Length: 150
Image 1 (cartoon, rainbow, N blue to C red):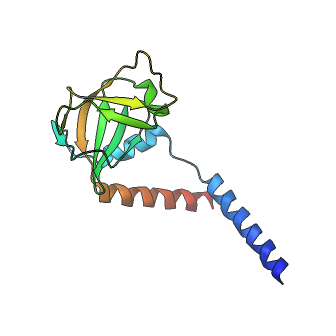
Image 2: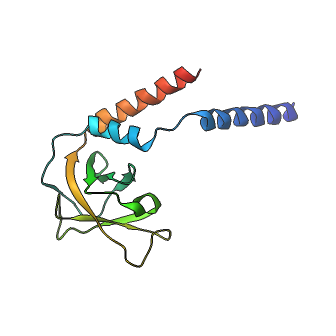
Image 3: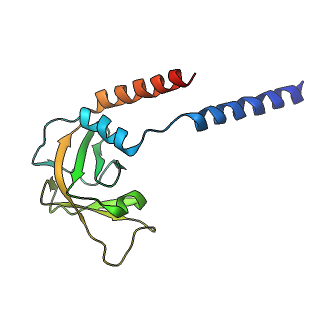
């Protein structure tokens, strides 16, 4: 009986892992479009209370930074930021506690990022994100992809 349970648990775990592996992942362009559709009008800047709560790269020309658990900003860069994909951390070149569009930059950091000649990536636009609507849209999109696959 114990052996049957172990085999059943192993089969269930394998099935779950297979299901996760088969779920298509959104491309960078799709994720950027999803974030753009839930972003407000561009703003001159935002207040950064201490350090970032988190961040997510959306390709090499945009990223989302989280300043609080329910406060996020879509930062679109002036051009490609090649090291952004390989970064494990980042720094914002703001002076004081205010990050400003067309003035401040993103500096990707990490072991896979080139250390010599590292070029900051200038922030072109800053847009506030509706994090609740973004979360709901992401959940709905994932559910639709799973249903379409079935």
